[in-house]
Length: 135
Image 1 (cartoon, rainbow, N blue to C red):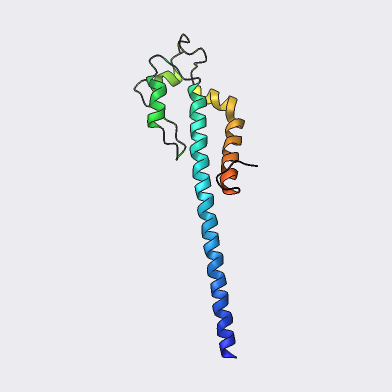
Image 2: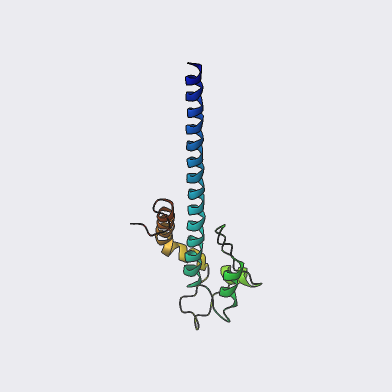
């Protein structure tokens, strides 16, 4: 009888370890899905924001691709004049007719729902269905 109890306790421990391993796998899968969704969202948002970015030589727009941290969701336009162009300077529209001040705010106002859907679909597509698209 003692062996039977010991066997049951061991069986429960193995079961508990299997559940913990599965929970760990699920947690890692969700974290990977969240990271992938964040990168996708950041890239789509940057693309939409740059539609309204001031373009003279293209350096301001190009600096955003180099300086942004997509994994953290941080979009940065890294030139000496970026802050001035964003808040104060009315852009010249000869090279980009859509250019405006506060270009990220304008893009957010227009594309916020698209960004939400993109992040949701990417997260659910990876977390629930693997690497494929949402079905």
